[in-house]
Image 1: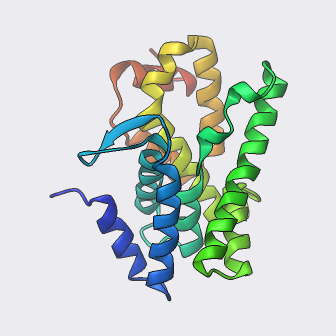
Image 2: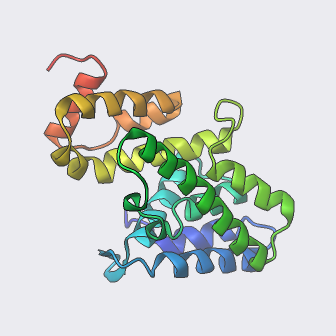
Image 3: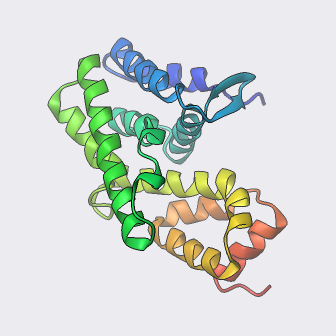
Length: 214
């Protein structure tokens, strides 16, 4: 079976929307912002900004968790890290307090940029507010879309970013991070995580974090 391309996923999702043109316009606008990222990677045979690549992964992972994902959820997935490089970690104080401040400000920044893009595309305030709530991951336990976003973010981290991340982090800290990551996910997200095809070293660390024998 040939894997779906990013455009095929977008077009398939757009076909379910009340206004497919508006949805496509919003996605395109978000993608143009993310493609400006100076960090470059190759995706689907094309040189793209890293954040565009990341947004494609998150969009696909969201659909893998919920093939009927709402319009607000899919827009939020595409915009979750929009223009992230414009607010680098180095702009904030070192240490945990600085890190937490950075993460908090980042979420609000992404939500604000997304709201501006969606407003320009013609979305109403109700939809923009829904996307903002998802981007901020508010009310995880009572908001299924926000929880799906959290699950998708955790899964992209484990599947794509974890192998590089572990090389720069002590095993003790990695295990702590993995336990926190696991605790953020729903049962569905945890089941999907266990089904990921990970490298031997990554799988071992997850086993340690979950209390499995080495």
